[in-house]
Length: 484
Image 1 (cartoon, rainbow, N blue to C red):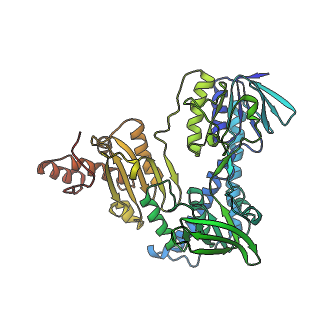
Image 2: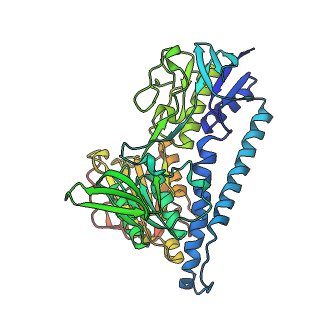
Image 3: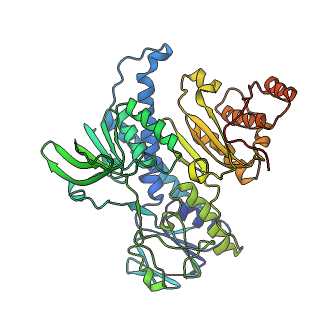
């Protein structure tokens, strides 16, 4: 049989492109080496958020007396928490299988490798021919070249879900989104946590102010953080796993002895067994496959999406990439991939969400940077959760260049800026949109009102703004200049 589309990898990207193609009548084969759902379902999005939910509940219960509620000592059954996490994961896995069956996708279990430009061989036993192919094989945790690390048997985001007993202490290598989410969740479930990061600050890809405030929050919860460090080696002793590291700034050496070790220091693309040489595709040292604006590889009929292209390693990015490939490879409608407005979120507490450019060298010189604190937001004050801020970068005319939010419901509130950026709306449009009161979306109105106040030059207009929107316009605003 000649398939219209052959997809290698049943993660979020592969499932989406396979399902969309089958829905329009294409003959689709989906090859998966393990289980449908991929990293997001089994080792990332789903289990981590289930764990975070339990940890957040434990934290809130321990602070209930602040709200006049007495619940007594909070006891955590770690084994039961992990059982619930695995149960949630299994429910998602079943739904993925059912979805593919309903759409008529033929699922082939096994490892596929290219044998020719039109053929993939599965487990050396079945040849599958296709008109077009999509590589969506995902990625795996990368192991930093640290002496003794692998011998120490570190946990990763793939293996931590097998824990049934709570470790007494945990060292986390890596302070990106994965490391921070898991570190805080484990700490709130009663584990003594230490974070080690080679970059000068935690969450280095985000606004420096986010990292500064989030670090303060983590440390207030008892989490130890060492940034800007070099880890020389790891050794196993009777008392635990000993991580030796040095502060780059001072040169001082330290060691952390912990009962468990978690590595969250980047990813490596899963392309080793694909035999890419057979189709003339060259991956880089990290396994990343280069693609053009249509997400085509150097082989015209072979596309790549998700973690293997090394761009935005998030489920929602893979879904967008799948939509682009569906149009190009299945419908034959030229479509280019644009990730200029790609939101990102880190589900710590407080939550982090960002899109576009909002800080430092990333923001254009003529950008206006507007900022509002959570403590100015009525909903945050009502709930007694005032940690955080929202920052937006705009052009003099109000076009949104980017936004960063640290605080409750950050990812949800950010979506308003994402829609505005995608639809070329300005802060003035958001100001004239009715926002229900009181919600965290009040951040958006506050920022939009702040922008409008800088454009009003006469006292009557400023007074009207104060009367209608309940906002006191500042006399001046840093970063605001004359409109071009």
